[in-house]
Image (tube, rainbow, N blue to C red):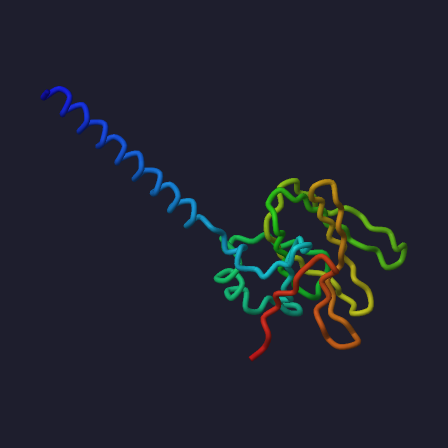
Length: 170
């Protein structure tokens, strides 16, 4: 009888420990959410863009606190001009950056990465010509856009598959 009671005590203890571990793993996986998850993506949007300033970066700390998981963000210099923060929605996306030549209208590849992470690009020395094209590939789909400031209304243009997360001036 003592052996049977001891067996049940061990079994119940073991099951309790396993249940506790399962709840702990679930809590840990829930806490491992990314700040990128706080970006208000709509269903078909694949990237977010924020205008950071002209010739110098303003309010990057706002974006690192609210949308990014790291303060170490690579910067790609295409030309002196506007700074944009670009955040891919999925890390499995690949990215290519092309410098657009205003004289030949031909793009030339300057950067390529198979596993995408947030980055900053400085571009658009002229307000009449977007000198960078950003290309994302995700699930056999290719999306290209060139960020720029609209001369018509001053809006930040991020392409039809992106979301503009530029902080509004207060």
